[in-house]
Image 1 (cartoon, one colour):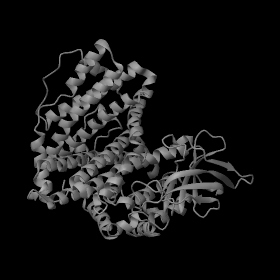
Image 2 (cartoon, rainbow, N blue to C red; image 1 turned 90 degrees about the horizontal axis):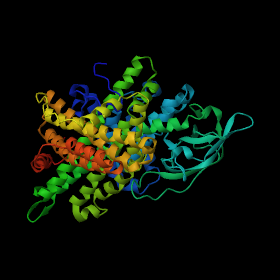
Image 3 (spheres, rainbow, N blue to C red; image 1 turned 60 degrees about the horizontal axis):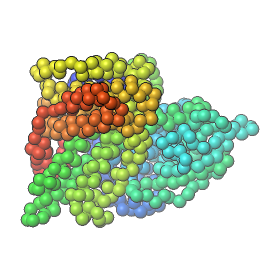
Image 4 (cartoon, rainbow, N blue to C red; image 1 turned 180 degrees about the horizontal axis):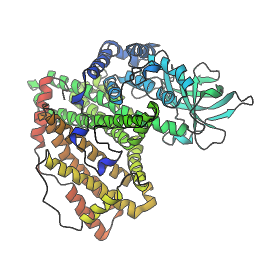
Length: 591
């Protein structure tokens, strides 16, 4: 590989060069054409019938996915031998972003192309893939994923559904109940998780909707994504051919976790697309709404909101495509070593599972911020179902619960990184000890300021030290009980997340500058985000330290977090004015 390889979690202890990351400004002509086709589909097929979608008009969503399949949107990342386009991970992420602005349709399409298709693509044997994948990739058949049960949500492996091998050895007899099944009302292909006999771990099965014994409750009534089919599904003595066992016996939990890694990253992409669309609507409304004799977009309070919406969106995007290319590079590396494509893809996603969790959290919380402020910009009309921001607000809320709650994903981020450190896969202990030693030394104010964005990179280096300081001390003091200290774990996760996002933004702006792109507004967004991050990191750091440290240790660590979260004064008002002026001039999200 021409780029320097980096492992998952290494962003905390290694510097990354701007030339080693991918930025959205580098999309090629084919990728831009696919993105435009996705946007055209929403404009022509989805938005004109959005109210009918939310009313769950019979057959409408099913037909839209069929049309998306005809256009190729259901098979972007499916290999050509199974009827797909075989595009890389970055391109599939771009498609997820563009279609992510499609409200309930985005949820249905994402569930079909992701959790509805990928378990079979990545874990199915050749016969299973030949039978199911071409029809899923074309949109002829729709897929769904049956994991959650009434008593097992975040604790997925505690599911009670059971499968028993029939006496003739030809079928498994499946019994159980699943809930919150997206696309459940119309999917022809169901990936169902259940335990065989008294196994500790789940197994996975491929079912078809016409198997006898499958019944459903009526469609769920939900706060948002009202057009998305969501049903409880019951399995009563369903005969499942033994050849429809997906993967190995007891491998279901692993399948579920690995598919969720993909889902987390793609959810961030969809949230990004929805954020951009909501920002554009906010700008358009602000430009057209007049109060006190002029457009509300001329007022500082509104400009702050528009600029901050854009800053957070730009932040998510910077990290998302950096991560997407890291995953793609790792996939290619594994393929070069002789690994089969689907296995290489899973390995790439496993490698960056912590970063996938980070992006899921940041992307969904960015969207929540954007639509919340969107409603505020719209004022009373934002609360009216006649305007489109009300739908965006309701539909956004599920994303902090989908694909593992944000709380679970925060703890997962830290858990993955610490486990890799303990297993010797990631050298965190040495750097953490170095940071602890540094607290006892006089600060070094002599640093190289000749490189691009040297000051910002110095602040970034200190943010990384803040993570290492707290994580190292907490792990040493609390040892095995740290896993139960969820508040501390979430503090560490939040600091890690901000660090990854800030680094991604710095590198993106630096690369834009290297490529000769217009970087003025991007630089303003990066500096404003970094400045605000420092205060957030300071708060989280102090909260964590005060939760487990005492006496001299506490005082030393608090001095350390003060040092590591210190940044130079910066005029964020002026930066946001620059950003808002550009948005208002273009009348859309334009970065």
